[in-house]
Image (cartoon, rainbow, N blue to C red; front, top):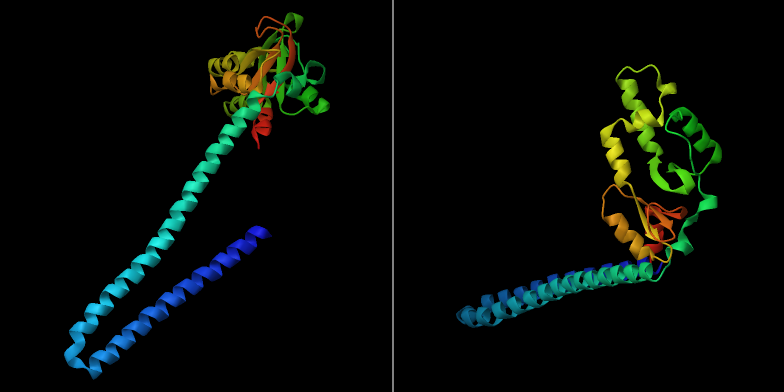
Length: 240
């Protein structure tokens, strides 16, 4: 409500300034015209006095409005910069382990690559744990995370190509697609247990395909996972 009031006041102020300028110019022009008509021989003196006045007036008004816009733009730029710095500072002072999804809260599949995609999607729907599927190997070592959209697109492409065995397709079939396999390999990163969210974001930024980071004891991909940080968690904790 306060913002609407400010906009309304500014609008009225601008209208007053515009009408004041119009009437002032009109009045000065009318006065000058009358003087010229009455005292034709002094027209030169009248114009010499009026024209600089009008020029100064118009220049002052234009300078006021342009300087106001420039000041507003500069203020916005400074505010955006300050917000960005504050977001980075917030991430740098927040530990990943305090914001991660703990291992026991994650929807995890330790299934073999022969697991059918249809069965995986049914399990994901039954658990109601979002649209990302973390896969782990022996001893909870991270392997990759598959987004449901990747599976859906893969099945759609197969259907468009005329495949009739969609219900029998497996993770192994999915990984035969080299483009998908390459994205999955670059889709995860790991950080150590005492890392901050700024460290997580830095790990994500290394690859444009990376939206997920696992937390392990020492930050190695050969260690059991302790938790999981998504790009959504980073975005939520960047807000100030």
